[in-house]
Image (cartoon, rainbow, N blue to C red):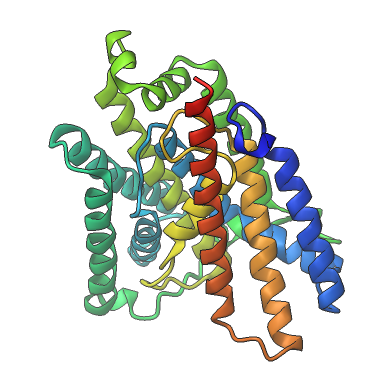
Length: 328
């Protein structure tokens, strides 16, 4: 089957799966298939998709970042703090992105300079960032409410084009621009080629003159930046900063990236499949909510379904890796 062969695009299979899910949920629930609901799905996707773009970099080098959800949560708390310090909206954004970049850089330094396993390193960062966010929220007075009132900041994620009727959210435009830029960078730049080379064969890439440490460091910093970018967008959408924001997001992000065709062993995959996979997860999440309103199905089945999708994605990745090994 082409699905289990690297070099064959996952995109047709993902589009087919997406179509089947839309049909199933449209038949099962009366309110799923509507323009209003599709707008809701589209407006909620960019946060997860932007995080998935950063995670794609990490998986392409054969790494893993379990801290992205906590970095998102800490960024939100930091952004509320910057807002409380009367920073203008543009400076809140820059300072928030710098916060995510710093945490990602710490991950990269520990992994590349100390040689600590990425899972252990990012697991530690996950606990550190989440704990620090909770401590800030409890101890700093201006973080007690977590509210954002600056309209210039809120419009970062609340603007639609056109204004009436609302069709395209500004967050979708951010995602499209970021997708195009990152896709071109991965395909046409020296840095992009070095990422694939590092993930495919680290030793051979090093012999070819690739600075492996620098490449790995940069990918973890990029992952931190995209997590903080997602945090800024989520905060602007909600207008409320919570220290528990992004809890568990890392598993959903990894699910999307692996389901989208990026190999856990590194060196294989592209962004288009990842974006479609994020859309699939968004449809599943939204469709399950609608199912809960018309049936007695429990909320916890959402988590069961997400876990099942992750397992399926890992099985497909393992089968593709085995098939690629046999074909050598």
